[in-house]
Image (cartoon, rainbow, N blue to C red):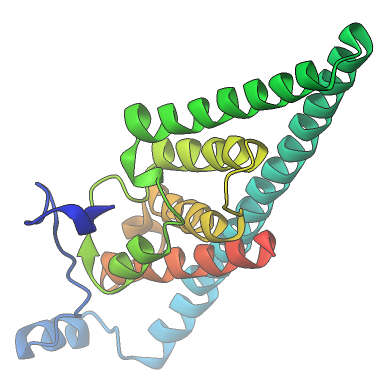
Length: 217
């Protein structure tokens, strides 16, 4: 989406994935006992378990999005066939059936286009290049927002129903990555105490993208 811009859009910036390893920071960790065996064990039992629970929830969330997309596709395709059959029985005309098919596809494509143009432009395309940018440390505003998830999931349903040359596998990677990013809404700084919150978010986004890709296939 952003490849057409001669310069980076407003709000595009780098993400700090590097962990502070200055002598002062390491001395602080040592003074609070971060490197002690007992502290490490308590971190693993409490916060390590929380990480696994969040990863399981991310996988379930990505799977639920994939199931919702698949069920919606089947429903709309069945309604499309019913509409064409109804027009055929009513008019006994192949031309009328063809026009009904074209009209249904045009309306579906229009809905998908409206979601991309007026709801969230980052919902366009598969979303894989944008997620790769995020994982490489480039912050794109609203890339992993719930609004983008809505536009992406609903848009791909209507795009496939419209007969456009696209599939749901790529968008499901983006959708799963957004589900992973939603884990950062649960006040991770208090629950996980990460050394770097951006690194934690990156790991969850990567896990969500992997879950979404698996669910899409």
